[in-house]
Image 1 (cartoon, one colour):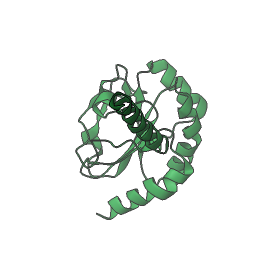
Image 2 (image 1 turned 45 degrees about the horizontal axis):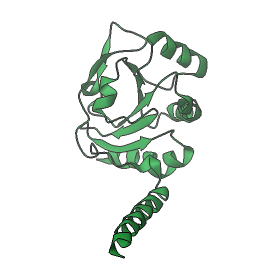
Image 3 (image 1 turned 30 degrees about the vertical axis):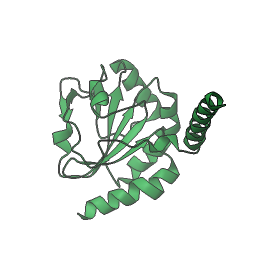
Image 4 (image 1 turned 180 degrees about the vertical axis):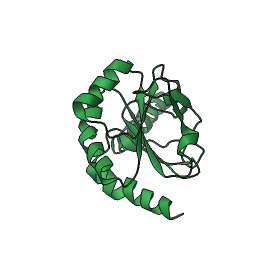
Length: 175
């Protein structure tokens, strides 16, 4: 009888863990980088490949880092929201064009609009890996000292902007 109870117990434990996992929001995967210094980088700018940009260039201001790609379907979903946010000038948005051909990224922004102050070109994806990117799009809120304060996985939504991102930006700008 005991030999049947052990597999049944293991099955029930697995079923409970799976059931609990189904109730979780996949966009809230915890990041080990929260409240830690954003990884250093220095990359060529997407539109001006002879010029570079890096994390150090944004020190002293609160900013968003949006990881995107021309091949990313979900990036098209969030793009109008980022365009509107950039028009408000509430927070500067910097892009990290992830594992994309430079020409494709430039053409995509020409077609859909450019919400970014500057986009860095992460052709091989190494900077994205340093930031713990699971997949595009992902957006980071980074404070004046270069500390990651929030990570949004998936397309930014109006609700995420109103309830999480913009209130955090306002709070960080006070300090």
